[in-house]
Image (cartoon, rainbow, N blue to C red):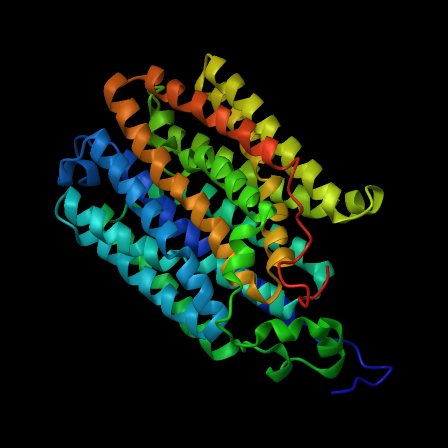
Length: 438
């Protein structure tokens, strides 16, 4: 297709971003809802609770939270590789239906073991979401639009998770915790059907893309070609990729607290369900603002620092170090509001590194972006297994805020280690020299 000089580009690629944003929201709603259900209090005239019905203690809850993390980590590279090989259209449709089914099934489990199994299977489905969405962006968007698209998607993800606690509290006033999971699962199936019928792996074959938009997308389309020839040797020999994995583990370790133990931590201040769920909004809400801020200043910062290599190092490294400092402030807080404001700022600083990390995956990975981003997210989600499991033991042993504060000290240390990694990362040089340049 050759565009005429007067032809304006269509906006099909913006619909792709909208699909990514809605899936990011669904992904986080599905994973965060269990932490709020686990924190629900029982009382006279109240519906039954998950912890009460399944007779769960803190250590069992930590293992159940961790089941998602370990399966998510194990299936990151396989599902990212499937997206590179088969194309994200078929892979995303299948995995979203998979995780939606197991979200619904979470509401019908009968003990700790059965819930652990179903959350493990749920995590296996969710593992492919962000690597395949990154593959979609690499294929459908010109390089200059990719980091902002990542920022928008991760903002939506954070805000979806942020408003899940009050949403779950609202739903639990009308149905019990079992039916709440069924409701959340049904929405994902609707998304999968709509996406499959609209999306195409190659943007040039989409009926909604005119010649002008195809020219704007340019040679990014060659990333759409199916292949299984991932250069594994180059991948494991890349120092930048190892450091990218390490910083994402360090970033995700403290962040996993916000989607697992946070509702219980807030309630350790002896707050009501409604007050606790309102304060629990802050970390993920502020994290979304951090993603927006990173996307807004990234191009300006790159222009003043000689390109995205230095600007990404600066914003991600400073962000992680600052996040650790705010967690130390949270430990010293004397009220729930003070602690949650400090955690909100820590999450804001944390998420300055998110768009930079995923943009680095697109530039380093090129046509292998699904595999590279899957490998990074695998390391991050090993942390979502280790952190909540360790947290369960600490909290069970102390049964008060001393246990939580011990956990938060470890989280702050992880942030400092992650910041140090960014000093040595090259976030723009591709593994494959034939990959599209940034």
